[in-house]
Length: 347
Image: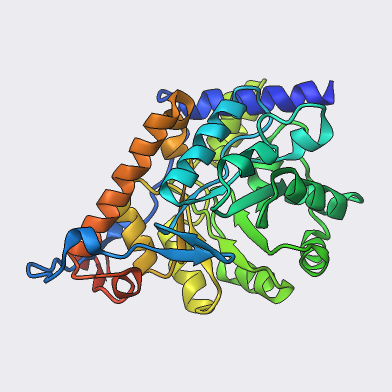
């Protein structure tokens, strides 16, 4: 029964996020407050702009992470295979959705070494929730999750708001930081910590950095509101009302990115949460991100086909390249030096 409930929850999440009528986006990312200074004389060849970077020793052709999206539903297999094929084709990193259901049941939902076979050359990131890694089987779960997809790193996702609003959610979060620190010491691959859409503050980022995590995904507000998603799933009106009160809760992605980068300028960061297009990607890189993630924005394409998924990311990459071109940036390092200003009326 427990496995069936978990699988149904994952199916519900997919249905809600894929449904354009569902009001799962309740706040803005903050990137709308920033604009680049246009360069009318770039003196560059657009096609030769270098978007390459590296992650965990593997080369990427663009600084994009296919962010953790889905795990634990039968249709997730096709979605994950489309995403993995796209990552390999375009040279992008990929993080899988939560592997909890795959670890606790007899079905993998596409979260197997098949992903590594499809995407042999790109970084693959395994994924577990904080509740799983601070249990008694935490290290065993983490190692199995990594081995399951031959991952280059493990993402530990933090979702306290979602768990608090979810019927039957994990409410005891005592000891999570110590569990992360222990995992960093004992796991054979780097540990990445991310939120799921409410953002990470400088204070929390500092504690995670001191615990030794390799990278933080600020995963701010402005994308999918998991409070709003849980409101859609609520079985009683009072549960829905409680969840909807938090639908716009969180630190906007751009604000989280700026503040964490200012506090910890050498800590590698991923920016995700409502990244809409390649211009948002460019802004995130200029504000301090090393990598930029997209999830919900590509989910419909990944649910449709591999070809649609490739087209989606080709468009994002083309937009990023043009943003570089129109700021006079021949590479990502130059883009990070491009003039990016906060809108005067909002400064």
